[in-house]
Amino acid sequence: MKWLALLMLALAAPAFANDSLPPAPYAYRQLDDPKLEAKAEALMETLRCLTCQSQSIADSDASMAGDMRDEIRRRIAAGEKPEHIRKWLIARYGDYISYEPRVTSVTWPLFAIPLGLLLLGLVIVLRRFARRR
Amino acid sequence: MKGVRWSLWILVAFVALLGLFALQLSRPKHDQVDSAMIGQPVPPFALAAAVPELPGLSTADLADGQPHLLNVFASWCIPCAAEAPQLAELKRQGAPIVAVAIRDRTEDLESFFQRYGNPFSRVGKDDTSRIQFLIGSSGVPETFVIDGKGVIRHQHIGVIGPEDIPDLMARLKAAGR
Picture 1 (cartoon, rainbow over the protein chains, first blue to last red):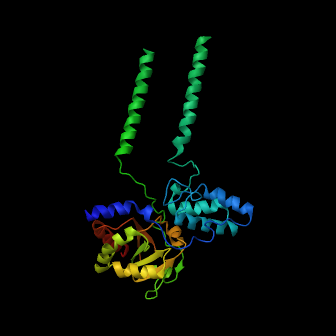
Picture 2: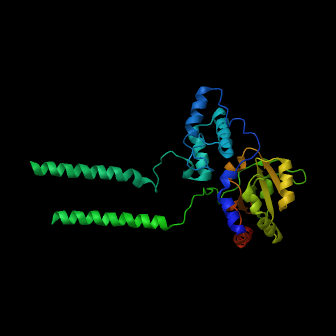
Picture 3: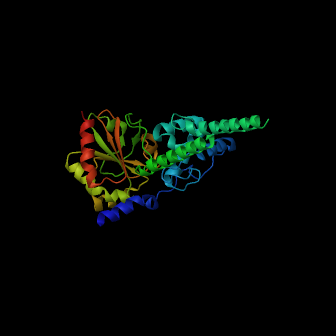
């Protein structure tokens, strides 16, 4: 019974994930240069929040998402390319952290199947027209 | 005749699709984000001490020749309190355990250690979760097995239960070979 309660607490962890430290400097503050901020924003909208997995880090108020925004804004301000930061994060968390669709050995059917179906439809339609003539 | 063959193919495709659904649904749910850093050295970092009585933590401390357990935790994390008895047991069995406290305050850590005990030989202080980004950790608590060269060998996500102790001890031993 005690363990069940602990297990439930463990599963409900995100609800308790509240620390008392103030957010990181750039978690809620935009960069002064609007061009750099736009770059950071575009990247943050396509990165998954790790503690609330259906949100992007731009949408999330989880402290870890705030810390990640801080990290990204600092790096963008220091001149790092957004795609370089994305690669750095993928090297640590895998493809799952990025919302940007990529063609890989696992995802290629997602791109190939619609093309195949389109071709199939085209063939069927052409054959029907040929028969009618 | 041709119409029959077509509908047969559609039926086969439908059954195959159902089979795929059944296969995927029968697999256990996996909604954790695993670190992609297993097998890689811990990137360079140096964290100040989180509590005055214990030293902080840096990459060099992890690559000192003996394997360690690295516990990523916080005093505000309730599951972290739940795994405290298991960490104490791991220490009793001889595991060297170091820790990083995420977004934490010294006074909160002190009262956490007073209530749940302190199995750590070092506690680094990370106020911006940066160590988590470096090693691919996605929450608290998480426990990493680091070998004597500072290479990440294993990641345990979530609470350490009593049933996880033998596995972690075995992995620690394996990392020492």
